[in-house]
Length: 162
Image (cartoon, rainbow, N blue to C red; front, side):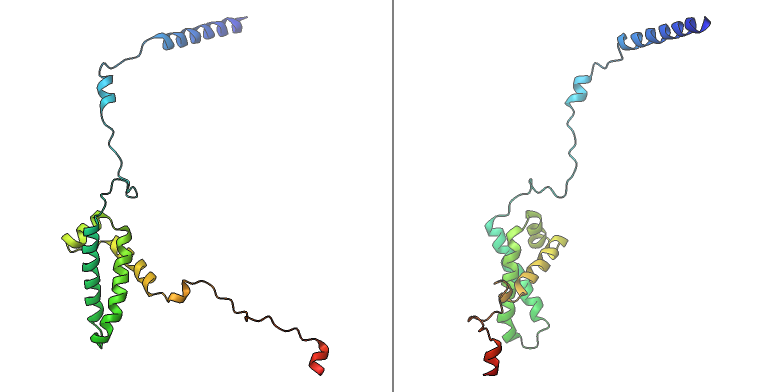
């Protein structure tokens, strides 16, 4: 008989404790409004380019001219015949500079024109532009079929004999 009384007392004590814990007010802070009003610091996201300042056309053309001139100077430095190579390298350097200005950021233009530095992002864009501009032009047309224009004549067994 002692067991049910002990269980009743334990259950009653547990129930009373739960009721008291649920009904007693917790400690509150009167400065809750001040805590909620603090601005949340934004986490830096290097891949978010929505806040980037757009580069104007004038800055793009300045960059294009300066980059093409630097490219041509660098290529002609080791050239055996600079007079002939100037035209060929000039076309390639102009293509590279034109390809690079398609997705320039304001920071890259400022670093290149203002501080005379080449950021890593410009080097990556330069490599992609060189690859694009130095590929043979026939690869852009697509796959060519090697089938002849005229359908092949079917030769039978008797046509080979006679």
